[in-house]
Image (cartoon, rainbow, N blue to C red):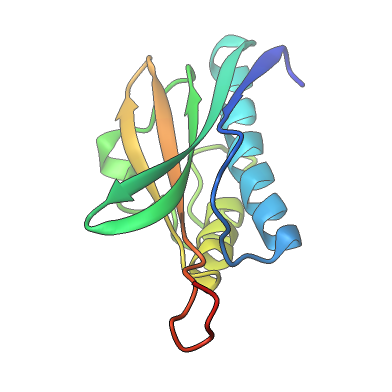
Length: 141
């Protein structure tokens, strides 16, 4: 779409997470579509890398999905507002995509953040999802 190539580096053996598949799909599509639209507006084509991995982060185990684009980046003054309802950096944007994405991810116990954004270089979004840890009481160790 819009001459943006998508590359995937997905870990094959990820542990289980608690998620609603349609919500997860919508969250991923929203982040990717946002990246593609921004790349297209700034340079007419580019790349989007999607990577999944299992990580220990802030003392917790999580599945991480990173979305890295080579688009225009997000100006520092906008970073604190990009997940706000109605906020958009694009003229034709509605300000619903990232707001909705945050709601979906948080409803599944996860987090979404901007790992890095460098003007004229690109942006990396991170979606973290908690692991499904067997309960000792369930006897499912």
